[in-house]
Length: 89
Image 1: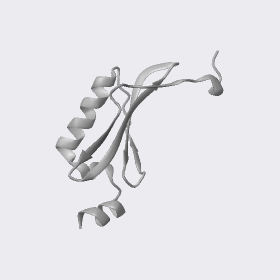
Image 2: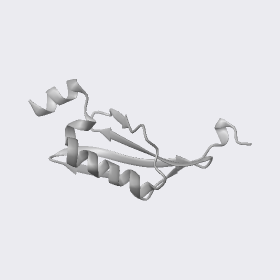
Image 3: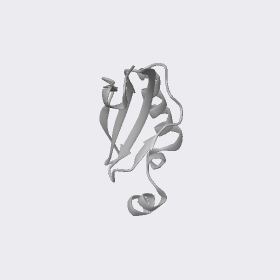
């Protein structure tokens, strides 16, 4: 049985740094060796992390969710209210 010290985090090859409209996001897709579900986390240029509530059965589905979120909600989906005021006004 694994202890917390033995858990290995496995990063997807789909992890990427993305630039959208001059703003930078780090897209991290990962799982552990004890859970096959992939986690989607997006970190903005201020270091604020957005972790999606849903886990994904494949890393490609996590990436697709990132793309859909950008398309539907825009870049602002990954920034706090205070950060939005700083960069969008």
